[in-house]
Length: 471
Image (cartoon, rainbow, N blue to C red; front, side, top):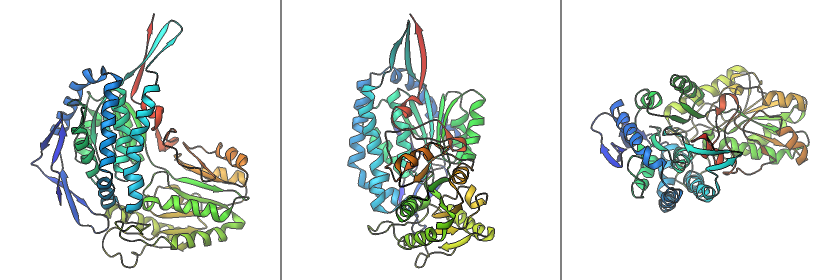
């Protein structure tokens, strides 16, 4: 068991002698680490360190920032295997996927900023004005457990690159990869106080970080409920914030689409990370006359997704990250049954041979009503809702008929037509005929899915203020 009873403040590991939080292995439920249940005092120390370091770091050269990011990139590559296994154990993503995604994406994102930063215009001439892009200040980063290091990197790297200083509160459910990051940064030439890590619960250290007057911006990824609380709290002192929150994304399969390909693509996306993905395509919209065929194809696809030990290379579906999340998903499956949806595959019972850990069967519901709870609320588990529609106009209406707008997909034999329909979806990104995810394109949502964008220059701009010098 890893004893991580410490916080990283002002360039030093500081031991914590108070209460701790247990970190559990998703596949077994065993305690694998302990992290601090820190108090407000520790968070205030971290904020003070970041505030002190801001003046010099905000004036540092681009070359110095790039040098630190190069060191970080090398460290992430070197410790990729450790990161993948750590997240696999905490979150439950199968090791083969965790290697490419949970460990691979952080290095990829860091490298993308190394390439983009030298080309970014931090000052430009507009008429008789010099328009400058200047760091926003001290940034509080609050990150989730489902992609624990990836979400941290999406905030920390562009914030540091912009010249900001950072205080990170990682998820206490999956915090260990953040400690690996802190250890890597500790061995770089990053000045003391630029990056700080405090672990604890949201109602103590998170609340302090959000409301502290010396924090200029909060960047948050997590639930819509928590994002709303952050937005209200930040309004009191006009603090900037960026929110990446929930989703209930629709995969719209048009009548001329290759049904087998579209269903397979939708199921694979929906079940990635056992459905613990905010962009998961959890609503599959199909023409009414093809509903039964689509359900059969989906059932056949999930039958191949047998839950198993995520540390085994052949496992395709792992457990959920916590007992709380497992119970929430099972409750939603029972709700779907009570609402009258047709249970096509899976169900609320524990998968065979998975008595320990937080496993849930891959579940498919057919004949789902668009206004039902399982079609409107984010389940965050391996549950797919198949919704029939009569015509294209109704499909678009159903797709746009939730409070969310984070992702989506459109499938058609005609690429131009698919693109036209995609343009009618009120969502931050749309996968057209199985297009690949692009880490250089902006990522974020409409409506209750968030405010702001991550990735690429758009992610950097979130951490920059704009001013004009009139010359």
